[in-house]
Image (tube, rainbow, N blue to C red; front, side, top):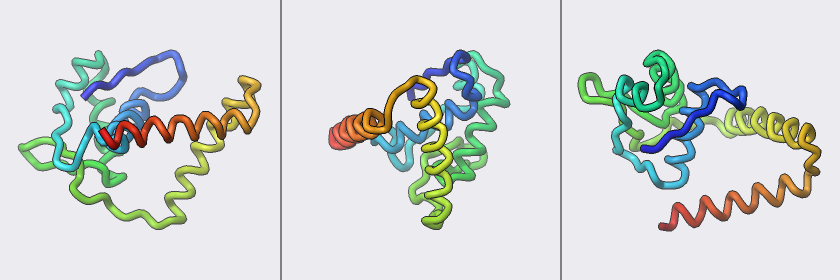
Length: 130
């Protein structure tokens, strides 16, 4: 599992880990039943505090993306915890707000953002089909 973090973009490291694991799962590079690296191992690889990785894993567990098996490790969930549509939209709305705010700061218009999202979606679909 390849995760890259940066301290330059202002996004907390644990959230970067969460987002990248979600992306790996969405793209099919992590499949149900796959084991995530132990907390200490990933912390050493990323050169971060183990508590940061533990917090990311806890967020992933709360989201239903991973399950912990005592004494065995952390695995991608076989079935995700169902979220009501209202909650899904709420999560996406906050991310959309952040994206639109960033686009405005960079002086990128909405049409370009939509085009970018479509391109990224196509790339993700291609990765899933591999």
